[in-house]
Length: 202
Image (cartoon, rainbow, N blue to C red):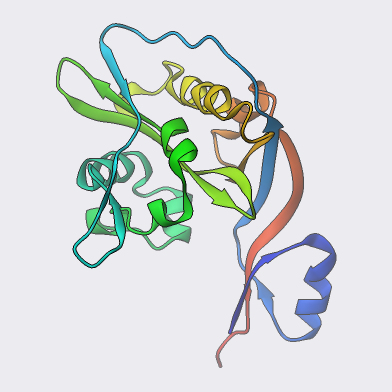
């Protein structure tokens, strides 16, 4: 049996019921939406993802495979991928994301392409979390890190959402190197959670 997103004042209650904490600790961060003037190099192409309806009536990203490749190259072997049990390329294919979104959140999401190679090198996808705009996933190909792409994708999101959503939230794991990017952009941390607790099997 597992319980998820345990707040600090709940940990002891769960522990008394026989639950053990998992090793991953996370926290929400959020900041008000705001207008930014975001500059992109001519070598980059910036798009919002497109969503299509599948034959079964569900929704999927038109570039789902390219997004999966970008996320796989960005996250593989990392703590977040381990926590989500994502080890192979197919584990990163986005499936349900568009079902928890809407037109403005899709418009505020970003795909960054290298014009030279036409490769998707970074993406930031937004979703709806308890009626609040939230970052579902943000990834940058390791070869393109250190160029401010994550910062600019978040600034683009904050700008596009201004006037529709007052806040943008994201969920960050303790020890994630991207935490400094979020702090520098003015995201304020909430309480730390133990991501999951479980009852061990003998």
